[in-house]
Image 1 (cartoon, one colour):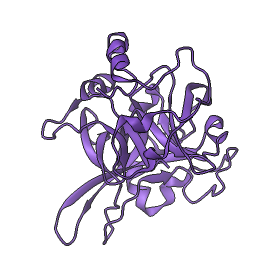
Image 2 (cartoon, one colour; image 1 turned 45 degrees about the vertical axis):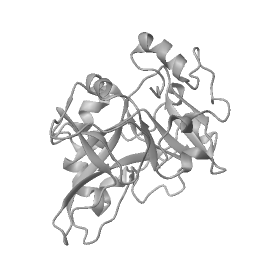
Image 3 (tube, rainbow, N blue to C red; image 1 turned 180 degrees about the horizontal axis):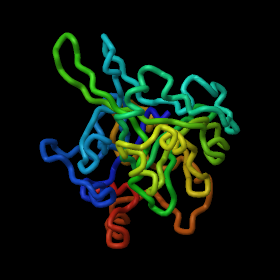
Image 4 (cartoon, rainbow, N blue to C red; image 1 turned 120 degrees about the vertical axis):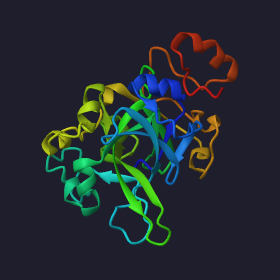
Length: 267
């Protein structure tokens, strides 16, 4: 977790939100309603904190002799196998060899609008920050791997996960990505940040600011990339002052003037 997330904000919105610009050697990435393992997506790295760049979702350790794709790194490392929300032991991520170098010098902000999770009955859900607080930044790490057969260098990232907030646990979702507050974003990619400071950021996001709703099985179809996969299959976990509804094209057009970006506007 997460094996899939959403980034449908347009490039200008992402650049403005994070005060960066896309490195012009790259082509913009199309909207992705479901970013999965192997897809390219936007990140901001500790090596180049002033530019936006696409990397592959899926980290391969630099020392690997064969290609592997790691999309998630547990903040607790091999500890807390039961995903105990009361766990207060070490954030032992740095003890795992595949993450030891990246956590020290190769961290990134992973751009997202929302993320997917599986309930206790294995049904897909969409989770997001309330009040249209998007795009957001997930804590990530990355690495550069050279294919020994072809010489190709592949740069990939993974998302750091932690135990789920109470709201997610209420539907049986046990883990969630580490969502960074705005004040924590620069701390995460600061090259000189001490390890103790970094590990202190790897906590669940407060439930008060989260919401989610169940989705149809369209969200589970590999490679499916259509806004219909965001249609709610049931009620949201908590009521909102201005409920975010599935947007048809006419409503999306009507709301553009209010916020600059409608809720996952398919247009």
